[in-house]
Length: 440
Image (cartoon, rainbow, N blue to C red; front, side):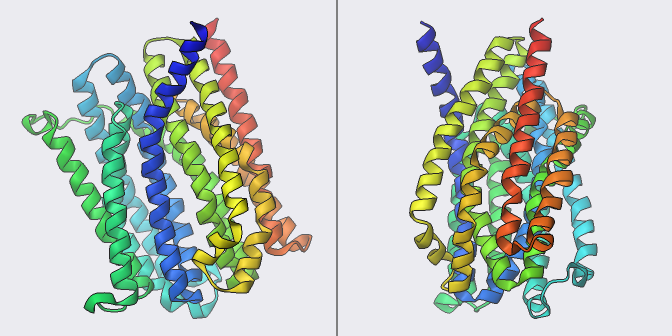
């Protein structure tokens, strides 16, 4: 009987995780489509896309952090059968995410008018600026979409967001083909065309999911738009966002270091980050499924199931990490050729593989345990641990390895295994500490 329960737990997690994984991989495929097509268009465009995408990925993690607060809040209402609470929490999440995105747009606009301070190659600035602006316009639409997506997933509906995201990614890829290269009579817009494609797909995805949620719920028939859960979402979401931004920031600051080293190093870094995110999104999907289940069990005070769910999620992610490493290492040259034909960029990309392999275990643990702690609403500890792991360890080591010790671009990438593993150990310790506390 005990063995059957373990398999039931595995199947339960995978049934939730697979749609999330597929939708997240769809996001990666969208990023790959952008990067591959832009890389084939030109190396300056690839380098510019790398810089801008790293900045906006940082912002995306901030908005995701705000939306992640919905999982324990909506999950708690859902576990008790409180539909009114679910609806109110969803509305609060939309309000908080939209407001956060407008604040971020203001900050990024200030960065845009002072883009020279980033110290990037001057020949890239005319390519960077229009792409930056169009992605800026897309942020409010993206914020509403991820709020709706997270609320759907918190109630166990992981399939609907998957379908919407896959459809949006297909639209984005098609528009990329038309607008980057100017096929079928469309204007040849290069990197700017990729930005327009992204903006268009985000508007469509938001509209479809918003219509679906309104059509399939009683929201339209309610006049009360109170946002009782908004402050709770903000209090939980800001520490989670800070943790995610510190993690993403370690990669983004390293992108700046790569730009100081040269355009080829920046391009290689962009390719490896795009490829590496493939594995992270799989672990993220498993971690999100664990967070959904843990939120449900926490609402019912089933702490043994909370612990067992987390342990199962870590083991599943280890299995997937082995597959990811084998595939990427075995097809590394072919993967690099998808993005660029530059021999220098490909050589640098291949030099990052060893450090990429080394950080997978740490990435698995920190991704799963971070999701588990979010489900337990322990955002403050996540934020402090992330500051230690990335702000005090990973980023300073990247600079030291690259410049002080002369490791160059390869040295930058050796900071990642240390930072991610440190985060994983700290998160795991805290999770076990909370479990022991609640079991007493």
